[in-house]
Length: 112
Image 1 (cartoon, rainbow, N blue to C red):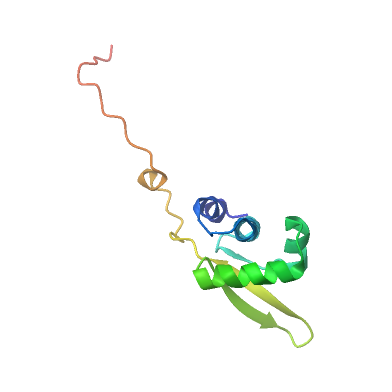
Image 2: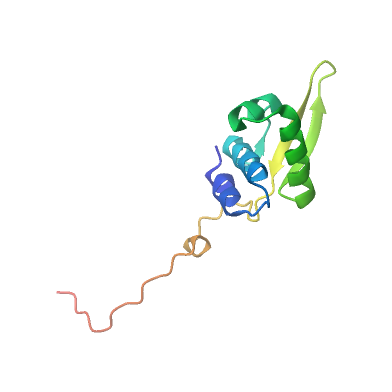
C-alpha cells in the first residue's frame, strides 16, 4: 500500500462520489511506484457496484488525468495496470512538503 498515493487520492476532487471511491480503492492497492492491478470485479465487489459502473468511472478518471491505464496480456489472459498520477511521485519526505512550519525560537529563553 502506498500511503502517498492514498493521501493524494483523498485530496482530489473527482466530481463524483463513485469515481472518488474507485480512485481511493486503486490508491489503496498501489505499490511504492504508484502502480496497481486489481481486477474490475474485485473493485466492483469492494465498492458495491457493477463491473460496468467500475469500467465507466475508471475511464472518467483516466480522461480527467487521475490515472493512466496500461493494458497487458500473456496471450490467454488480459489485465490492466493502473498508474496513480500523484503530483509528487518522488519519495520526498521534506518537512515542508507536509505543510509543517518550523517554530521560531524564543530569543528570550535561556537554557539552564
